[in-house]
Image 1: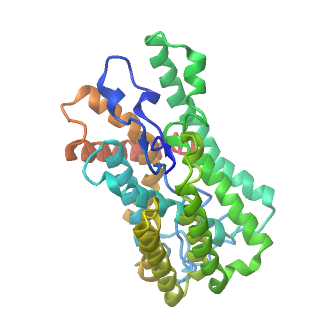
Image 2: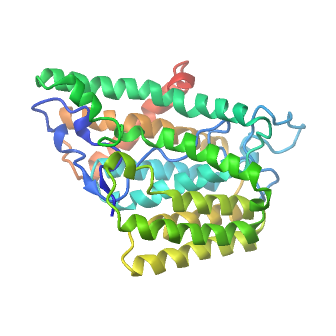
Image 3: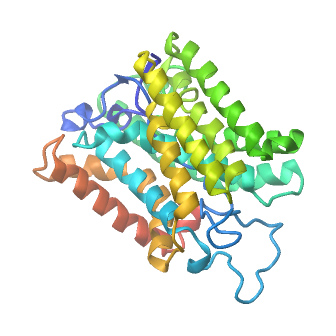
Length: 366
């Protein structure tokens, strides 16, 4: 199966002579990322009506009527909010090589499917160019900020080790490199716009009886040949989670109908188990992620202010956690692979993310 780095290695910014160089060696298999499309709703999962379909707000969204559900805590889906933060925690544990790291493909599948849901159910019915500009602000701007930070650190490491800077920079980008842990942001930008274009060109995809068979067939046809290929790491990261993307479209089409949501989750579970029994890689995104999202959409309780904070922290934790783990490995007696390193890395990343979100920097860096 597509060999490569799981979304970036610690060598991207490891200082010579320090233990960080062993944190994230290249592995074979899926790839981690921030998970989700932080569009104009920042993956809010705002409910259109309590317990039914939800739509993200946008510039085209009319002002909420007094008492109407919107981006208030009561208008949110608490299960979606908490699932996002739980997925971010799994990614931290993956990079810390802590117990629970094996859940990472499911975490990324959850983020990808939810990103597709929001792009499919979005209210941005204006021009396609307007949708692209909004997503660029939410996804490509933080990508540019953090790419400058992480690539700058990598070049500083290379300079300290007297390594060639041009080759070091080139190796950070595809096809050889994965842009560290940041690859998911341009992926989410491109994938969400593809979903928006599909929604506009093929309105019938909004019907679950159309979306679900297409998702199942597309996932099987995608995973089977990909399992036999061996693309470069920087290409592989952009190809691994399309099945979750397909089923995210189906979930958005089924939203509001517990029956169709149940069928969508069951179809993903059955297909994933069938392909997994045949030795096909990448099925955790179907076996775990899609059923969890289907259950959350069908039965998730109203949100609270606390769950809103949890949702907002998901991107912040993703973007800062690699640097946080790097500092911890240099300064604290926490061994790589320990539960303590993963738990402490997540806690510190969440606190730092919360501080940045509450400051003026939050709107720029997240």
